[in-house]
Amino acid sequence: MNEAPEKSPRSVLLLAVATVFTAVTLLMAIRARATLQSFRGIYEGFGAPTPPTTSMVLNAPYAWWLLAAASVALFAWIAPKSHVDATEGKRMKLALCALVVVSVCMYGFAAYWLYLPIYAMGQTV
Image (cartoon, rainbow, N blue to C red; front, side):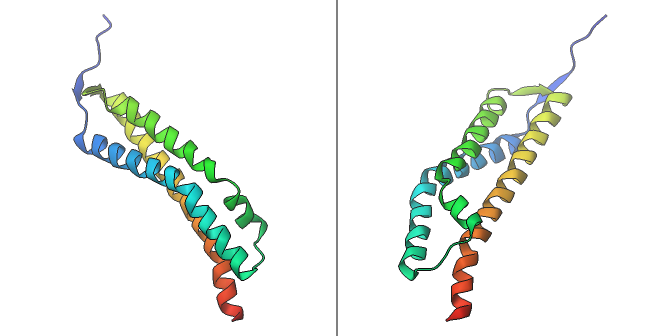
């Protein structure tokens, strides 16, 4: 006979991390446009040339909403399930870890290319 897999309570830590991560990505997405405009103002104020990659980051303020949407979708998957089987629990953890890694890489990429021209200006002064 085909038995239903045994379900156990979903990890409270998993829910807490998903909640905090969703809040942070939403806040970052909301603030992205103003933050990138501030950086653009800094570069224009100094008349500094910006590398193409920096221009790409500056011209994509709405790209951060992709991470926010993914984190909201992940939260919507994790939050309502109080009991999960082992396979689904592992999938939830893997999805959350993958999204955190992708987000950290994207934020690191953006930070590097936003601050690189500022450091270059500091070396020439």
